[in-house]
Length: 322
Image 1 (cartoon, rainbow, N blue to C red):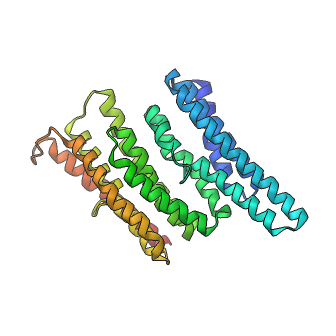
Image 2 (cartoon, rainbow, N blue to C red):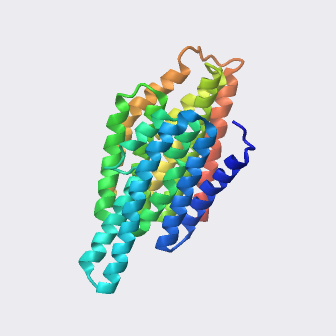
Image 3 (cartoon, rainbow, N blue to C red):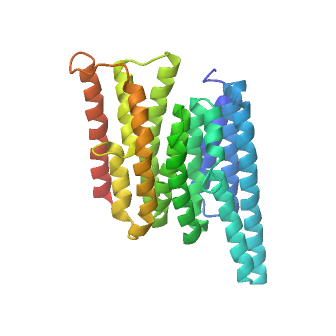
């Protein structure tokens, strides 16, 4: 793949531009248009990469068209409700728009396509589906989602992700169900404020990016060095939110910010169950190395201290600014 392919650059610009439009606008139609531009950019990136991504693009396109249709239909129903001054019609339009966003973001009960698309794609497409492509629809849920449906999504994602990841044997499958568990935490943050959701999302995206990068290197080289394997193990525990890993800070931030602790029962329970497949993932990275504190192992310790130290400092600075 040529990174300087004009079509690749244009598709990447559309992906980012649509994301910015969807997140920054207050208009219903502009938000829908931004999400569609983002989807077209994503499909363009897939088309340039390789023919193996055709199945991924087709699955993703179908589910996004369905979600967009429901969202746009909900907007039209809302406009009709405003003219007719009917609260029932307005409520119906809001539910349709919300279901469309749930479908586009892969929120329970429309989460089944996420593991399928992630498992069939390469690491770049998987990273985009598990991370970047969820930002716009989840962010727009802050306007559309009712508390009841949002809580259903939180509980469903937490348990579906935790239980589904237990019988996964591939790294992509584990990360796909891991993204569902983290999606539950994102929705909890969204129920409090958009800022809390964005902070958690950025933290998750950074950890996911590092782990996907490690997996890409291991797959390309048919194996990993001690430093790469150690970094993969550290990132696995960090995504699990196990103290004192940096990922624990983001969950702690949500835990301390949300007033209704009852909504945290499902995400906490899901994270505890998910810890089992995170530990299995860590062991798969570190298997085969005798970790003695000499030579290259010191580099692994330095990576661990540097990454977690940077996250802790950033966390303290962000809390100070807030």
